Length: 360
Image (cartoon, rainbow, N blue to C red; front, side):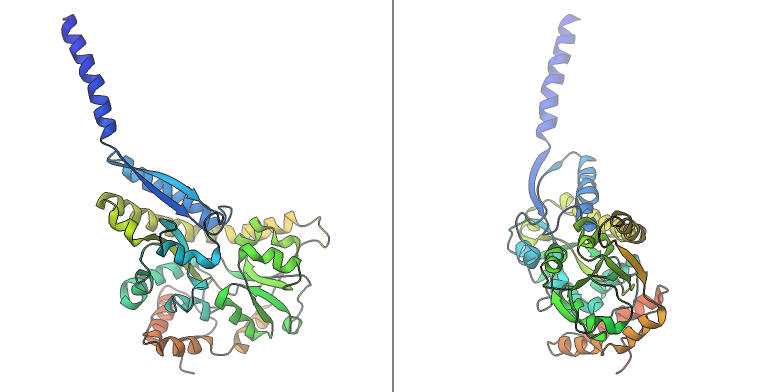
């Protein structure tokens, strides 16, 4: 009997190491140009990565050894696409609307402002376009990428050094905005200064700009309100900002089970991120006002009157038409893409402030 027990114990000791050896460790670098205090970057860490880990743990075949490099440790906002393309990182957030020359179709939301403030609706529409327009998918895949999940923004408002009482107050002002979103300022006569959340504070502090067109959920963690305390809530619209992607060479080296886990986690990340933006936008504005109430001057929030907002919309040139013509000149189905995007919003219950797909 004693010999039988000893033999059983030896068998267990032998079995445990063999089970451990069955789990293959994979090393993946995951990065972003922005810090994890920015919500859509933080959720890579709190939603995407844990979901991959959870799915792989269910079989025990593979485990990811994550090498994290957030907050611009490997590259800045102007190099998100090339850094994933060239394998500087295995997985990274690609800031597509800073890549207009390379990713023209991805800019459709930047040229259709005031169309929707509903992030889930917009991202659902964009993912439909990803499936329906091979040219849109190619726009990502041609750069050695596999698209994992979409990201958007909360709605854009103005954050300025001085209060805005009328659209005329904006005329001639230098307003920082990311990439093509500077075109939105053409409706108010402001001068666009190219920038990103990582540069806005310094831009305003040093006088490069007089304010920014930006997001509450980006302004809050970067403390931009300290130098631009006057908030004018415009609700200028949300945009498709890019997405999480993996280097194609890395992707091809991974087992199917891991690929499936990455895609499923990417879908969850997109959905969770979109709803999170909806839940937190108003709360972020309230917190900014609360945090800035004792500074000098204190943070002040005003809501742009509906008539003034519509005046801004009506003053804009045909941004979508200009964009579509330029993209069509490159052989892209931009007009069809624009119609499909606007129809997708309407079919989901949105009422754009301007019919950007209407004939000029």
